[in-house]
Amino acid sequence: MGESEAKAASEAKGAQRTVVITGASRGIGAETARVLAAGGDHVVINYREKRKRAETLATEIIATGGAASIAGADICDEASTQTLIDAVIERHGQLDVLVLNASGGLERGAAPDYAMTINRDAQVRLVWLALPHMPAGSRIVFVTSHQAHFHGRKPVPADYEPIAASKRAGEDALRAMIPELAERDIRVLIVSGDMIDGTIIVRLLERRDPDAVSARRDHAELPTIGEFAAAVAAAASSTAESGTTTYVGGPDYLAGSASRVSA
Ligand SMILES: NC(=O)c1ccc[n+]([C@@H]2O[C@H](COP(=O)([O-])OP(=O)(O)OC[C@H]3O[C@@H](n4cnc5c(N)ncnc54)[C@H](OP(=O)(O)O)[C@@H]3O)[C@@H](O)[C@H]2O)c1
Image (cartoon, rainbow, N blue to C red; front, side):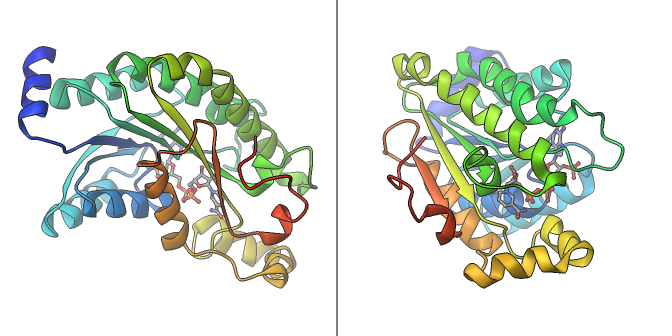
């Protein structure tokens, strides 16, 4: 199917949006896919390695009446990312929401510059590749953590420092694109969360350094995957000003912040 035919097909199917969620084979991305599909969107579940997991999720969504498909791509690889966008456009004609959820840097044996590669460079490249196919009114949602969002303003554990710095650099790079994106009527929304209960990362941390997790729990109950995913999904339809940050959990981070809508 050519691009114009795909676009016509997409218009004919009505208001269903096409949403790409990076790193949606598990955790927060997978739950966000469930929420958005339940709201009527077609979700494209991107994964890097775990095809079976992505397939199982798509099957589950379709079985409950939703629309989903899977698309394997390593967002750190330019050709792979281009193939992801091409496949989405070939099938849907356009891309209405891009959820930048995939993240990395804590993997064992990762190169020292890997965090910056995935958390900044890959995010920016994906936006540039997607942009020509995003109509006016589209949204880009960047998923981050309080430790990254508040990097430089609040202390960060030493082993998370490269991830926090690189995710903040990714956020800053996307914020720098806001004026250009605004000319196309495309918004950037940021969703930042405290440690999210039930994620693999927090479960591993709890095993390795239980005090770090209990110290966070001392401030307030940790948000669940469901709560965080609901905020990410809400941002995908937000009419807030471009650059708005939604905060989930971590009241101690927010105390003393000038505003709940901050850069
Ligand atoms: N976990 C938390 O407590 C927490 C708190 C605040 C914010 N966040 C943010 O929420 C987001 C999701 O976190 P999570 O804990 O749910 O993540 P996760 O469980 O570690 O899942 C990572 C996902 O990203 C995919 N992925 C990794 N590298 C990739 C690459 N190069 N290309 C494409 N996909 C890739 C993985 O796919 P495969 O499995 O197929 O390789 C997997 O689906 C991240 O942006 C994170 O910073 C997390």
